[in-house]
Every structure is written in C-alpha cells, then in structure tokens.
Image (cartoon, rainbow, N blue to C red; front, side, top):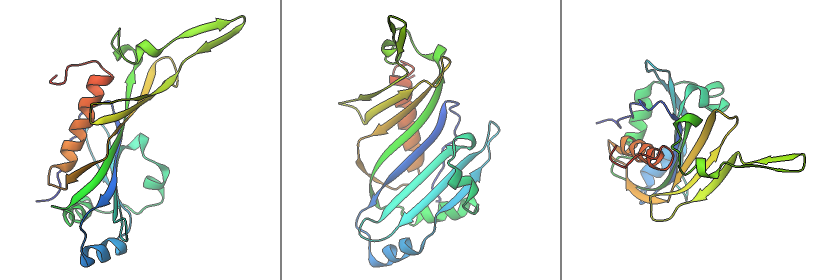
Length: 204
C-alpha cells in the first residue's frame, strides 16, 4: 500500500517537517537514496492546496526529510525551483522506506487567532506590557522547553495583536515507516497544539 497522506482538515495547520536518519540501510537502498533528487508535488483540497517535498540523501547519515506545507507557507525553493512531480511518485519513493526504522524528530507550525487562546492559558499568561517612563516594553514571543511529553519545545511569535504563530518540536524518536506514519505524525502534532495552545483536553 502507498504511504497515506493526512487529510489536512485542521485549519490551524501551516507546515510540518519530518527529518532524520534511516537505520540499517543496505548497499542497494543506500545507492538508490544517493541517486534520488528532491521531489515536490501538490495536493489539492477544497480549502486550499498543500505541497509535499521529499528529500533523500544516501551516505553515512542516510538522511530523509519530508516537508508538508500549506501553499501560503511553502518555502520559495519548494514552489519556485523544483519541478512538480506526480504525487504517486513521492508515495512510491516513501514506499521504498516502508518497514525501515527512522530516527526522526518532527517540527510543525500552526497559526491561531489571539481570541482562540484560552484565558487563563499558557501563551496568554506570557503576554505583558509595561512602561519605563516614555518607553513601552511588551512581549511578542517566547520559547518554552517541555519535559515529560513527546513535544520538547514550543515557540510562539505574535506578528500583530490578532494572530499567533506557533512551532512545536518533538524529541528524537525511532519510528518504523509504515503506511500510516504521516497520519500518526500529523495527529500527534495536532494533539499537542490542542493541549498546549488551545488548552483542550487530550481526548477532545
């Protein structure tokens, strides 16, 4: 079966990057990874397109990187410099890694409106504004380290007073590349976003 892609129904989602090393790679697979070029494909959805980019690098590190992004969040080198290939080509390439253990970490970006943040809540509690004479000082972002959860780091930035950009990053973990690997990765990041940013219970 081909690698199943997420449905991207979460309107807060902006991008997700999965990167790491493939373990126990034989000579044949290593040779194939060295010959592979970066590929990008477009996924069309009613609420907007998504781009998926796959990069494989053979050698001592046997590196794999998968980038999935909303059209407006895609890096310029994804949409401007790489030739678009059929989606099944990327799925077939990922299929070559099926059953392999990959030592990866996952990072994902989300966007929320300030009104969606719970009060009191983790991010709202860090907003402050003070004055020293005629000088105004206010917070518009922070980096938090998290212990005891798969997500180890939360970074947020408020470009204005209406929106918040959030980046979540996991601890490195060894995972088997299965048909539903990308689905499970996106679900875990969405759950972390719901808990740490929107203040929802884990099963909501």
